[in-house]
Amino acid sequence: MLKKLLLVSFILVIYLVSCITIYTKYSKSFKSKITMDTKISKVVDSEYIGYIYIPKINLKKNLFSINSNKNNIEYNVEVLKETIFPDGNNSIVFLAAHSGTGSNAYFNDLKYLSSNDEVILSYNNTIYKYIVIDKKEVLKNGYITGNRINSDEIILTTCSDSKGKQLIIRGILKK
Image (tube, rainbow, N blue to C red; front, side):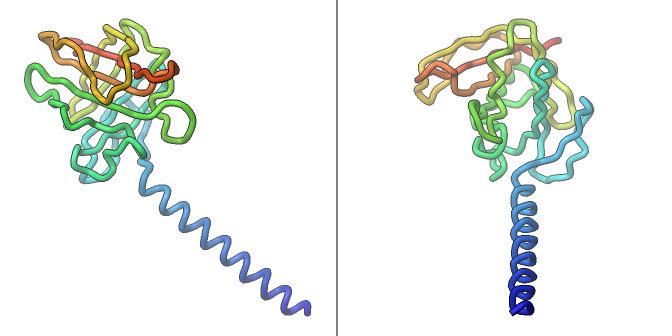
């Protein structure tokens, strides 16, 4: 009887260790480690294109190619397909992420941003610094609308604390 109990306990321990190992390996495939250094991240990933860093809310998150499976609001900050990256003039970068509760609520603290706060974008080994110029809530309808200004812009969006609305933070490139 004691041998049987020991054998069952041993099998149970092996099973639990296996489950934890598999969970750890699986969860790491959706989470990317990044250093808190404002220099270019040392992450080696062919789909990695840069990161977003917002000092005021201590957010730093990797960004992935628009066509990557990792560029998904369920796991990361998503680069929207309408984005025109800052390789020349008149760029506009659209980033979206969840807010609220949960491990993927990366934009939960966007509500604390205000005019003149800094948003840093790393893209193609270049750092772009944006200054927040506008913060507003609009009806949540699946679209981000507004008038373009004659400048390079970044638009951050997430659900608002107000039911049925989304928060939009707009910044312009600091020259």
